[in-house]
Image (cartoon, rainbow, N blue to C red; front, side):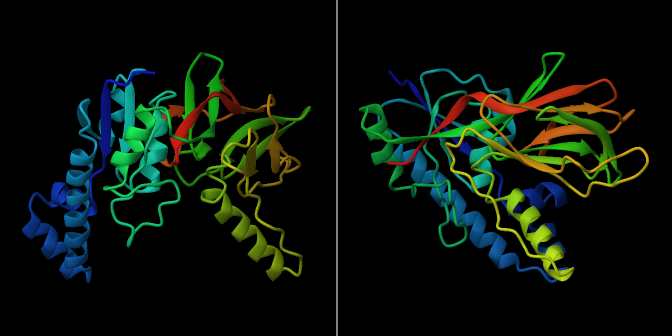
Length: 307
């Protein structure tokens, strides 16, 4: 495939977010120091990130067009089959980028290894040039990461790299009917979490940690966290805090959505229902009475370059 453009995806640092909120660095510093925060740490993070972005821009200058875009603009971008995508940031930036770029290869860069573990971030700013050249020459190795999708009856579709959440916007019970493996029942819960293999070490792991601790506290035997490979075509779902009453059950609370299978949720909430992915509510879909969502592995995968 012939590539014509490198798209470098950036994010705002914590300091930039504070400056936007308080209008100046001086005001941001006053706020942080007054509340006991370490302003110097915010500055170090910001400076390190800016240097990393500058280094990446120089590294990817291999004769192609280079376009730098901030994360908030990614959902509105028109990506093409001739783009190579280079996110510079935490793992969450990769997840929030992957669902919009189609099947374009992603070379993820860790801008601050001393600060971020970077499970998905395979390259430093100085290493990305070699990885990009290998991609252009057809020598790169990729992992085909499974995505999840929520498909609505009206044609709306939402993809997720790590996980989908279906529930209510506020801290009230979500009401819906759940259907899985030939069974169906009404639910009242804190919502449903559906995780991919890539997301199984994230939010899903915290659910298992909570369940294990509660089980141990009550004298039971804690179970082991369930983790899937990134390429695994299955998804894991967990119902959070299901409530049993005359009008709600808790017989379907967790399971594996096998390849080709799905989980069906039908909203019974007049308003406030929501479906969002990868922790981002800004592009959420409404999930109110009459809406039905089918959750399954997406037809396409994310191409994450690893060598």
